Length: 404
Image (cartoon, rainbow, N blue to C red; front, side, top):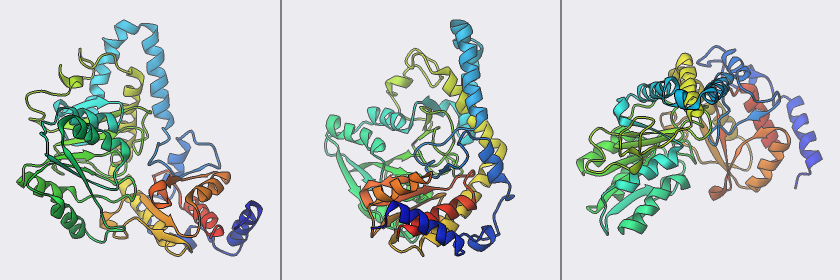
């Protein structure tokens, strides 16, 4: 087992031997953005110099513009709470809901502002009219927070929850669609999937799957926690009946922000209690809201819009592909994420075959490299956002290689 001192010495030796050859030697020069953009974006964050943050998939670091908006809103609110909460700031909160709707190509009437993805998914499950024996299909790779609402339906409606295994890694859209389609039965009433899988970064072929679900009158519930801010989201085009997401991951918004899209016409006779009096940010059924964080969510969307989600998405995928290519050459690494770019996003995950992932995590953290542990697979997840540079990936790969 490599000692801590030997690990650091070996990492330095690898760098000196040419493993860190600079951008030209380690990554493609065909980056889809100006090479200075990631550094400029990084300077807008509060991350300290020297911290290599590769875990946006858990929580993203907010830009200064977002933090300043939250602070300013708090100062404004607390100077005159009632007048501002139900006056000017209240009106601005409604403008944020419109920004969210535009960002995901929905009508504002279809959008509720929530605290996180889990809350949004649970609100939907609260009112799904299932009967004993009705079947819910999901996969073995979903986030636990997304499964809470499904478990609620099992306990309160007598529904049956079935989890299907997706290939690791998958090779094609057709392979994934086939696995999902074969899992459906005449009893299937709900299909819950992630837009971007939290474990592997798989970009689920939702348009193809939703066509199958619609033909069978199956309700399609989407966990979108990892998608907005990472890849373009069009809730209508992908055919979601309901789509829940958070603002504090790839959107880099304030913590405890989120939204829920409910397709027009859903949920029918009885909406969730939270939306009983409508989809406005503040209603009798929603109660008092956190004005400051909601304002910050609007600032985060403005920030992403100014950069362009297509620009962000292309860069994240490019950097992820470079990271994937180099990881494949590291001893003791087994890839979990798809290799096919058409199935990929800015997330790359792998299994450790000769080390405990918790040990790898701890050693990397000692060097200020922050990654995500995947307990289910003795794995590690890397998030390649717009502020992550090729040099950050160089450092990560070098340190990981030193542990092999």
